[in-house]
Image 1 (tube, helix red, strand yellow):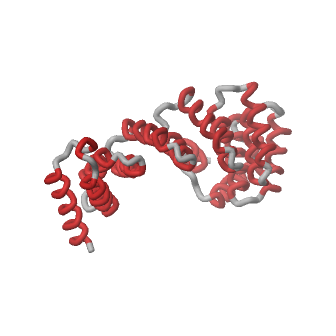
Image 2 (cartoon, one colour):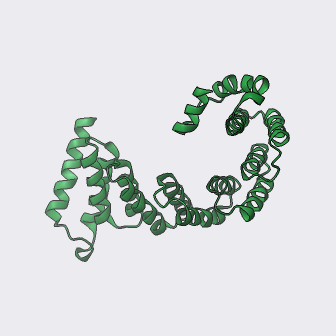
Image 3 (cartoon, one colour):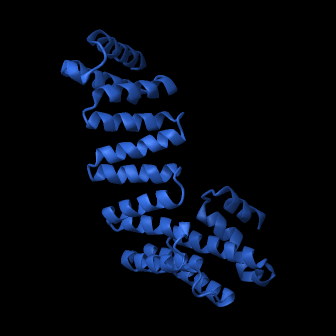
Length: 256
């Protein structure tokens, strides 16, 4: 019981078989002796573990047990599990319907919003997923790094680079010491033809993570493009640009 509780409290993703080994005997043999809230949470963990190993029949069996024991047919948490079962079956449209109906009754349910976003992405509904992610970030957690990164990926798939750049800016504000975010932003600037900005962010990434090969190549390429640019498109002198190119080449030669 304590180990299962730790998984929930620490919000870690355990090996599903470990969860099944721990949770199944409790549910099968000690269900009535468990605390009313605890029994539901353990059952939920067990169902999700079975879905993780694609054992839908067992997940449905234990979902029916929840429904009978707790007698709360319209619980948002139960509906979320029903939707997840349909997702695992590949019935994305049915899962979307379940989540949408649930949100009509419980519109501020963050977990169901997340599932609705995930299933729309899986079903190829990119525009809808973008709309839902924007709503999620506005209503729930503006500082959710994973959500911003996911939104950036969707924008990039749609060739909306400027919008993707904005998403990465938000992530950098949340975690300004993560060099990977500066690299992503620099890559987008490079795609947009903003070579001066790309060089700046590749340099920042290198400052945070010494000898980073991707940052060094980024400095090299962005400054090579910048060197060929019109004078009005750059604020750095050609001498400085050339020195950055030389520096990147020298550092890459040391690494290889």
